[in-house]
Image 1: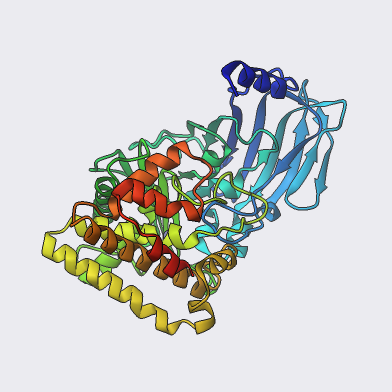
Image 2: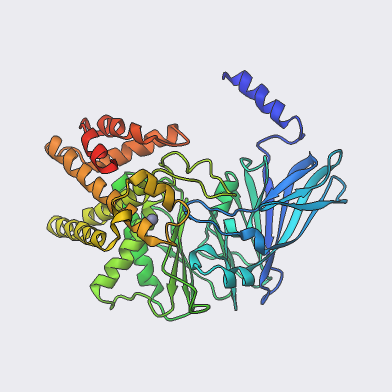
Length: 477
Ligand SMILES: [Zn+2]
């Protein structure tokens, strides 16, 4: 399509709405007063759209590999049209509301989200927002929905807190968060949904020394050495920026919640990665300090590195199915073994590269051995399932049945290690898997929505000159 045709096509699409496609959709989220356990959300279109429009609340989230019915916690959905007059709202099947009627217009949609009920009912800490005394932490996708057809528009976010509360957004992090109101821009709904907002007098924000502007936004319910924890995050981030050769984000936030479990059934073991942030949940008795035993410090450092690595793979280089994201039903993905296993291997390599050479080699060897040691404990019907069908199964139950997740990331990481060894051997040590990763990042920036599995050996060859088709085939068989 030439430029004129593109402009005409865009004009035809926007003919329904007088606003330009570049005009942002305005999102506002507000915690009205301290102690509230619900937030109010309003979505305002740049200009009134012909009715009806559909509000969609996510049930699946990028990298969630599961479904969470966030629409359950949404109440009091209202809509208004051109003159701010109320328009009808009808709940539909699935996480959808029809706002307005044909012949009318829709400008604004509002609703409330019950955070207390969300945290009570969603047992995995990584999947829920929360309101605790003096603190509210919001995962974008658990509170923000989109108006269908507007999800690729830029977003202008305003987040509002009680007057004396500091408020922080990962979209525009600040070492000293402003009081009562924070504003930020996001490229589209995905970037908004993938961000976090944290607020309250119990929030602690640290600016960390790193290659890129790096922030720790923490809510500790127990004793923790935040500066030490932050130094581990900074070390992990710097190692990965060095490994991949550049940072694909302008700033990065580690969001850390050190929580007293809400109930014995609630789990705090999983972390979550995002485009320019990652989110860590710890039970209040498992904080790491400078005096912790080295294996614990290494484990926490690796957990940071692994999740930071996801900012490259798969957030910006993935197989088909990750983008554009399917918000209402978790997508079936063929390449979780690559997203999880290769990101794990990149983290191992990045941390090893940052050590003295002999120590790095020993670290890599021990990491791969401990991966290999987990496989015999997994039942054979999962352990021996080909990677693509297993990836599809894990697309909706990666952590719920972690045998699927563990098998995928282990075999994916071991495949990456074998590729690395083949590349190093074939190039007499001049090339390594790192060259493939760097090439893949550049290739992915120009080739959305993602690679096909059968393109991967060619991408390795382009990056390194080494044929690895046989290795891929053996591991994928
Ligand atoms: Zn992961």
